[in-house]
Amino acid sequence: MISAVTAFLVALAVVVGTTPVVRRLALNLGAVDKPGGRRVHERVIPRLGGVAIVLAFFVPLLVLFFIETQVARQFFSDPMRIVGLVIGGLMVSGLGVLDDVRGVRALHKLGVQSVAAAVAYACNYRIEGISIPGLGGLELGVLALPMTVLWVVAIINAINLIDGLDGLAGGVAFFACVTNFVVGAINHDALVMLLSASLGGAVLGFLLFNFNPASIFMGDSGSMFLGYVLATTSILGSAIKSSTSVAIMVPLIALGLPIMDTLFAMGRRILERRPIFSPDRGHIHHRLLAMGIDHRRAVLTLYGLSVLFTAGAIMFALGRNWQVGSALILLSAAVIGVVRSMGNFQIALRRWRRRELVRPHVVERLRSAVPGLLTRISEAREVGDIAGLLRELAVAADLSAVELSNSEAAQLAAFVWTAKGSDQATPGREVVTAMYPIKAAGARAQLTFAWMTDEGEVVPESDILLQLVADACDARLARTEVSRIAKAHLRSL
Image: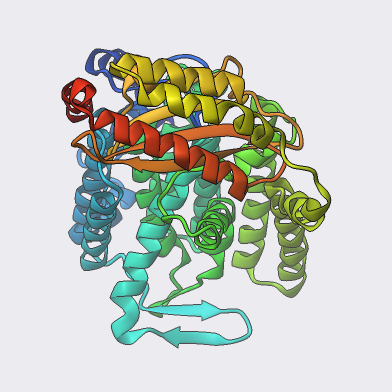
């Protein structure tokens, strides 16, 4: 216990001391988050805060190398686990740094995450069997490797996806650390307690800078590292003594909030026939903002849900009948709260009533603005003229944003327009986006329109009208007068 408390305090001190330095480094490198699109902040904020978290996590473990304690001997008695923690953690955090600075394709991220998960498996962080209450243990055999990789990659991305509000991912991770620490204490596992305390101290110290209003974001370098360490630590903490099985319900409940948010996001995108990794404003924190809850209260609400999941996971770990029953009640309340926050009830009601609605407000404005705009686009002589016409359309149709970006989602400044206050959520309404490919300019790009709506999706009338605008822009950008400039701009992104 003394070693764990020491690790917590050392990690806390290190992250408090290094975060301001990392913040200056991020500003110098241009690793910043700009407002607009799905982002809810209104000013430029540096990323790379995850670098401070990584340093703060590893420093207490490095100190153990020079101290002769029982925990130190246990920690270094299995060098392979040290290798897995260091190599896998640095792989995903390094990937995150690269993504924060330059951007990385989703499939490339998935590949590196899978390799890091395989490293964890090779270093004895394994799910070789699962124990399910009432059903007993199930040995996985040849499925152990894919199950372990799936678990690690899933948790990495779950933490990454929920990192959408100031302090949210850090707070969720902190409560997961609390769960792992308590489970480690119940099982008398000093190593799990040590790792959980070190990560918890790093996260708590970082929240001093990251809670709303944040002065720095952890970025992918932090969220992916948190996901990796939480995934591997939970495997250790939930391992059943004298067995290769893992009490899978404990980590599932402990990380219930990000897991549930990820499952909802995947289901939503599949139903909408969009790529699973495509961004949107449908995550639980976006739903809370759309219900009229302010930024800080939305985060605190989700902290409350995390506390419920933490309590439920600990009760499951204790394993007594009344405790498991209480855990089920808490989890039921949490699930109802999550589903309610996601706005699924409101969406279902709106879709049921949609046949009774008159033509949406945006459709009416587009019907008035698009015909004349198409003629003016066909007569445009310069790239800036087309940009100006798109801005006029945005104002006339009451759109929130218009953006032309290349395949890596970098923005072309001449084509980006965001209405003042468009990131402010309106109760009962949500942001929808319509995206159209632009290929004639000699580089892969897409034209994106965003607006607030009551319908929860892009209605066919809006889609047809905006497709006409996108086709007109595409055709005009192919003309000799503007194609050279357009190609230069798009290829420089």
